[in-house]
Length: 306
Image (cartoon, rainbow, N blue to C red; front, side, top):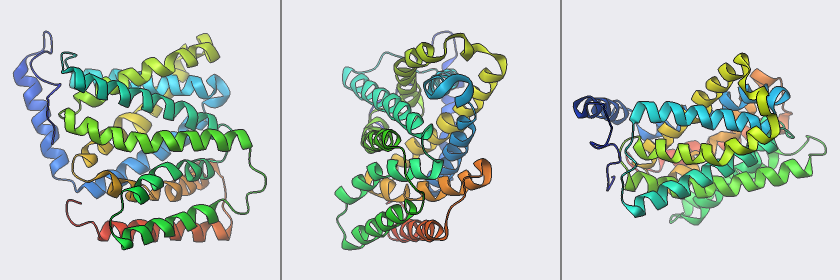
């Protein structure tokens, strides 16, 4: 559990009683949901957000979309949790690391998404958490499920024709950042309580991304419909899934979280087909089944709390 509460009494004019009530209510809500369900809900949310974000690329570009996403996500989380910046220096180091990794991961992934289909971009990015799952595995059965997921990842990439090399490189970079995000996210869960650390980390990520967005898109970012769409992307892609991820990481080890995230390519391919009309070949649907089977097998072997 957390070692330091960043949501304590340092909330300015807001009454402490209200903040305690809000955090207690949120804690009871999350405690009632199994950590596996939290991860799955986060996966669905973030892939829907990616599909919506892809429609924004023509108006504000990938960097502009990331800037909107992280700016609104930080604003919402800071308003909800109202964290105090007065925390231990070690806690701030974790928050800064989390924010920088989060910002870099989003910038790289959206660059990949602008060049690749959603399912392919997420599949390549998935190599990051898959590496975390393999590196942290202590049972041969865990390694088997991870290898099965690897086979699915490879098969999913077959039959799409020539892929954009720059897009693949950005997806690989996003995958490396995703692996770090899992590890740093676990540390953030240990050093902070409830959503305060997440809010501060998201604010750092916004500070990383917004200059890129402003440089690329300028005043196009403040069009009313763009702002509304950006808020929707922020809720779907950041506020909801990262809150769920952080709560899940409090209750399961990073290796289990990494294996569960094997559903990401499957969900991305499905949402890409339904929302973006990005169809898959038969071999790629077989790959989806491989990834789902690996995820189900890993989940059944973790026990109630990992």
